Image (cartoon, rainbow, N blue to C red; front, top):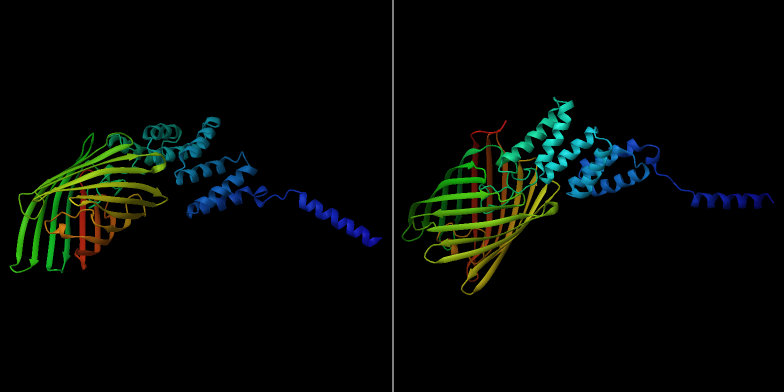
Length: 421
């Protein structure tokens, strides 16, 4: 009888355990779970942090700090709509919640809504005028508005001419709002040893100025050519170049470039144009055309897509080389790692028959197929001085079944004359 009682007790206990709800640890210690989620997010584990934050709010729907953290996690993943819905709801029910307002300021900056960022910053500064962090966010929003009413430099692609071969990429995101006028200098070389030795180098000097419609750049390029042929060639030429980066709207901008050279090795005329459109969630697409004239017309079209992911930026690009025999293509993929708002490291890999800038010099069109790798680094030396350094390697077919190694390198500087404090 005693054994029967014990048996039924075990059955009843097991049934209760199986059907009774088991609450997670966060039911008793939500602050501990909040700290764990915040650590996950700061370490870059955003998907896991998002799931954990949702679970925490399921147990504690009134935990406003967790709601604000979830909104930031959404924002860091560029899921702007759910982040905005959460923060706007908190601010509507509690207009004095400065943590929610500050998170909403950041979200507005990321989305390019600089006017809203300023208005929200003023709400906090009215009661806390010495808040340095909010003052800095307001200044960034004002600088972005002054830069031809463009979108926030935090996330918007702003072209920069230092990005050789990638004029429309988002190089140095804050650089374009650093100052209205700057001086620019650079050096580039390109060399190979088959079927003969050739060393081509270009010295660059110029300046840029920010107007209401966008940035304009003017400069001169001095090209120097050495070939180890019979007879040898030693030549120095000049090329004059002008660029413009008009901002058309919050979502649209363009790049225009014209260069002229009276010499033999630079193209006599070079005309380039590209148009970018920014879509939701940080996606950007572009289409453009390059034209070169030596002793014949050369046309190259290009299409690209751009996307941020956390502190990374990715851009696949295709080039279409229009020849008499038809259209040939080449494909490039660029990955860039941002260490802060300005400094980054970039790797580009490409393959195909229409390299991205093949016609800086007359001898370049002999290239058939090529596989190339390029590494570039951009950094601020001081608050007024920026540099970009790059190296590149190509394994290319210059004639049927004949291949060679080709090397290139560059070093560029920007010095800002009137940086914004």
